[in-house]
Image (tube, rainbow, N blue to C red; front, side):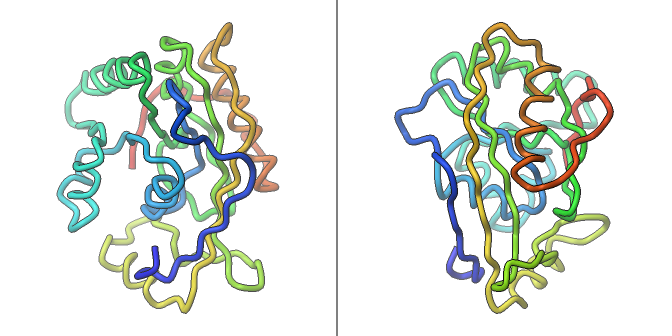
Amino acid sequence: MGILNVKLRICGAAPDLSVQNMMLVANHISWLDIYLLNAVRPVRFVSKIEVRSWPIVGWLASKRGTLFIDRSKRHDAARVSHEMSAVLKQGGCIAVFPEGTTSNGRLLRPFHASLLQPAVHSQSQVWPAAIRYTHADGSHNSAPAYVDELSFANSLALILSQPVIYAELEFLPPIPAQGKLRRQLARDAELAIAGALNLLASDNDASMSISYK
């Protein structure tokens, strides 16, 4: 992360390479999130198919075994869900962003319960992680946020304009999927991450649909 002037701080107990059949669940602010998580524990991600064509980022995502979903195809979400279950059952580790899109880091969007269904099928551990970006004084840094109609090129320029970006990954206690429905898993993970970030969790039930940004 040196070339992007990002300094990473890790809090809590991160999953090491011995952990298998694990779904890493995090809030989503930036395309940088993927590199932060992979710097700690290499995992496979789920992403929209458009990411595959992004310069450098798309190539790296493909090399790391990212599962791409084509939102223009009606049944592609089901295909990806089956692939996620297969990876987990084989002892693999997958990371998802259950908000389904990015935020500016000052709020937490409702978690989509359907993204946790493969963890239920595979009886996985769900490992929540809270992501935040700050300045040197600890104040919120919005430069990494990849939101609204911001292009990838403009997002990269914003990030490179920062002298230093301080990124924090706080790993929270894992949540076993055994005996839980996906809505409960999604809610438990959402509350854990909201608490770590001092943000309010949504009042709404977790959505049944899958959405990717």
